[in-house]
Image (cartoon, rainbow, N blue to C red):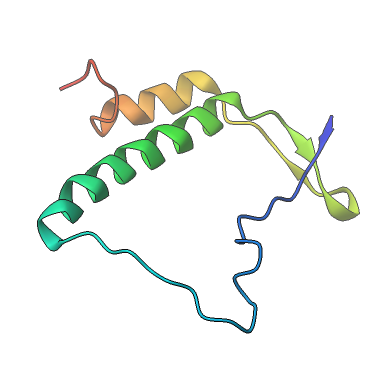
Length: 85
């Protein structure tokens, strides 16, 4: 059984005491960026659910992997598979 791991996405130096410059996109470029972000996030979540293994965490807490057949059934039911309508 695998052990849980922790990760951080904090930007190094972001909590410093100096100003940072920021470049922004115009509003008309935001929607395609958000759509791509949503699609990439959805794919990453599905990939992690499929790749997940049963793990043991702190104090012996166990988190069980999802059964792939039931996961695929739920994704198909809600139209989240590329080949389902």
